[in-house]
Amino acid sequence: MKLTAEQMLEKYSNNSSHPQEVRRLAMMIFDGVNETLKEMSNKQRTYLENAALLHDIGYYIDSKSHNKHSQKMILDYGLKDFNERQKEIISCVCRYHRGSLPDKKEHEVYCHFDKKDRKIVKRLGGILRIADGLDRAHVSLIKKIRVNYDSENNITEMYLTPNNIDYRPDIFHAIRKKDLFELGFKTQVVFKFEQ
Image (tube, rainbow, N blue to C red; front, top):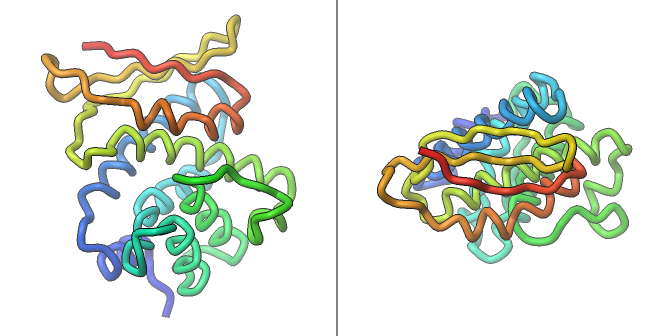
């Protein structure tokens, strides 16, 4: 029997607060990007939402390469309400939330996608990487994310509002993980804090 993302999270994770926070951050980034940079579909938003919830379920098997384990678990157990192709896209978005970037010559599932699906994986994976990096400490430090696109300079600005106005959280991991977003959207990402 196939499970929903929420059911898989409940079954294979003992920490649902981080995936829920990553989902919240990813949805803010998706919505901001959708309004200012590139229009994406509601279906793609659903893929990202499910991937955000499931990106760390691979810890159930092992912490080493947990992103690859998350992908395999999704492929093996399936996801209720998604067909095979959609399940493969969601599994790849999970896989690329950390570690190496997608490689159409080396990565088994990704290499079978057409150009359109590869672009979806890069874009959604890029959003998920940033959202995961922003909650690296697993303590929900970001209250709000506002996205602005500077078309003249091809820069995507992500304005971060911290939960505590007297404390600027460490965003090193988000900066380090912005590479896939920049590849998928062909833009440079700059993070800024605002009150």
